[in-house]
Amino acid sequence: MSSKVFFDVGISLDGYMAGPNASPGNPMGDGGRAMHGWIFQTATFREILGIPGGGGEQGTPDDARVQHVFARTGAYVMGRRMFDEGEVGWPENPPFRGPVYVLTHSPREPWVRQGGTTFHFVTDGLANALAQAKAAAGGKDVRISGGIDTVRQAIRAGLLDECTIHVAPNLLGAGKRLLDGLAPGEMKLVPVRADGSALVTHLDYRFAQAS
Ligand SMILES: NC(=O)c1ccc[n+]([C@@H]2O[C@H](COP(=O)([O-])OP(=O)(O)OC[C@H]3O[C@@H](n4cnc5c(N)ncnc54)[C@H](OP(=O)(O)O)[C@@H]3O)[C@@H](O)[C@H]2O)c1
Image (cartoon, rainbow, N blue to C red; front, side):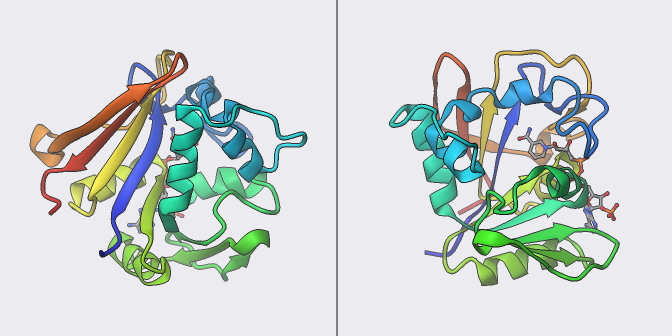
């Protein structure tokens, strides 16, 4: 089976994927961390992020979701602004453990980190970044990690097979919305599954153009 291309992101109930004033010093923008409250309660994410003391809940449906998304992914593509936040915020062993292709117009040498994560900087566009990611994924899937502009670009270019959107029950009121500016015909989704917990609702879709 060929590898799938997907995104898996969190949004607020009013549709924002980042709050206002996002920057490396303020990752995800004002109030943005609340979107991901659920994930920080899972044992798997805390372990992958290397949070001291570990903790978190094991064996819950939310924890299983985190395990699944990390297990299925062989390579990542992300935009430079998402990378900028992570460059200062991720630990020395970043939560990827594989190749990450960072879209940018500014060339840079690869940045090798602990645990198998290497950031490669790609200056010739999303389709080329995806081709490199697919070749490196070892048959696993390729995750478009974010940010908002990069995911939208992938939607518009018809490059996605599947997506998961985790809807948090909070409002951000301002920031950057995932789906702003997309016309109805630009994103045709087939619902696959919906479930959740007290903290979040998980929505899985298949892109209608995908086989
Ligand atoms: N809620 C979530 O689940 C989630 C997930 C991931 C990220 N985020 C948030 O998303 C925000 C970042 O998203 P964003 O929309 O601001 O930016 P982004 O998509 O992360 O990055 C945009 C940048 O990527 C580069 N780029 C994009 N397409 C390119 C192309 N075709 N060719 C060359 N370079 C290209 C450009 O960098 P250059 O300017 O260097 O050319 C562009 O400025 C962050 O605040 C992050 O916290 C949220």
